[in-house]
Image (cartoon, rainbow, N blue to C red; front, side, top):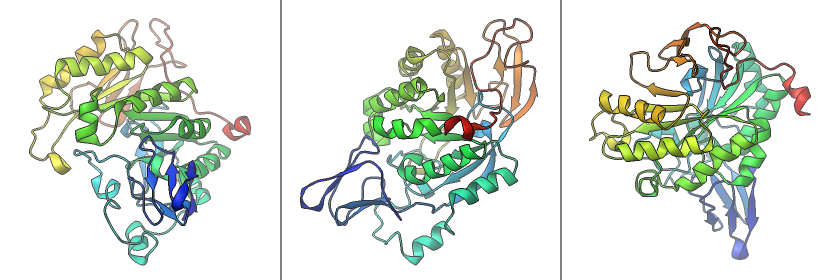
Length: 354
């Protein structure tokens, strides 16, 4: 347990959290919507500091990040908790675990559920020992444990590792200001551009997400965007076009990952997204001017990277595995165009940041 970032004290022992855009007003003894930030007598605490439910080594492509050190491995960590209630969440066992539970998150049952406490130094050491180039804060929403994320991120930079967020982007500008100096790459879920969808299916608002994409990019963080295409919810041509246009309006160089939905959590009644829909999303993304559009969860070469200038196949992938790279110093060997992305491991990151 650790005192939280970004909150203010109000009357009658209440506090106002300013970490995410819910900006929860939390009475004494209660928690915010994430379920892991608790007001104790006018002080807001993070209940998941260092309490990890997952530590694993993943290919960077699994985040998904296709233009950020392709072919490298990322040490991935997660706590419980999330500030959204997505009805299609594939990691709902951990993201929604604290929601509505009266259990004391400091009690033995909670500690047993999430395993041993981890330290920033220990995580960095494990990442280096497993040959990872980066640490990814993923699986649940990392915003809700930002205190721990940033402590790990600082330690990672001092050791020459990169930091990656996989986020829903529903954080305040102040939270982004705190995070951006320590984050090198981020994949943000833009679930749709319909506030109706965000209110009823996700439990949020799309406008802060669009702002987060723009702000992280403006602050020099490499940004990629993912949209899960769900039948009957965000798969109509106009919805896909508006989503692609929103990304292109920020920058046509942002890679867009359109991912095929499979039944999950509270949406087991829906079918998997038809392959034709995914191909249509790919075409729409390219039509609005996005330079890099990828289709996830659908075999057939849709995750390969081609030169936006001459069309040469540059990065060939099979699932999350990079099988072949034809790039030379971040550029196309045929026409010489430099591709947008982060292609080289940094040296002495910590010295540059200090």
